[in-house]
Image (cartoon, rainbow, N blue to C red):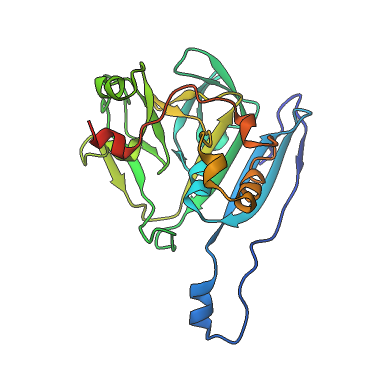
Length: 261
């Protein structure tokens, strides 16, 4: 399938490689246990000329890396300036409708595949979040919506105002799982999940829910070593430094923040 749109050329670059792996005379089973977990990250972005570039990168399967690729599950419908479009068909350069009422341009799109039974850093299976109709109000959403493990929802609940003193905050959808309105499910077959970077931090409308676009957050510069930060930034060829993501439009709450109220 060609993704070239009118007025935007398309070219392809492929990056290969992975962190050095231990070698020696160990038994195959021992060598496998010692190998660092890596993942294949697929990336599309707009370059400085407005052209769509595609890259593939092998990088550590660390939560901070995977979080940047796993907010929207395959099939989720986003509101764009041209109408509803499935996440798998969204391209860099598309314009999305935001919770703020503004429009935002997609600068970057990332994707990974969640494979049932595959090893993870935490040892726990990767789970999706299924949101049932009217879970957060009338037609929010209007039908079942499945989102990825790192999805954050823009929440205007009184609890949020009590904790942050602001009108709204980004809350992990997984922290709101109750087994009824928001249900965590382990996929039975491989599932593609995606994330988006827009020209500024936003909440885009996906399936009737207001879902955060990707931002590494203010602590990323301190939580990553210089080596890991360099690897991380290679996943975002459209920026030169973490500061290029801009500022967070809304504060974020963690699961612990919600439990403390």
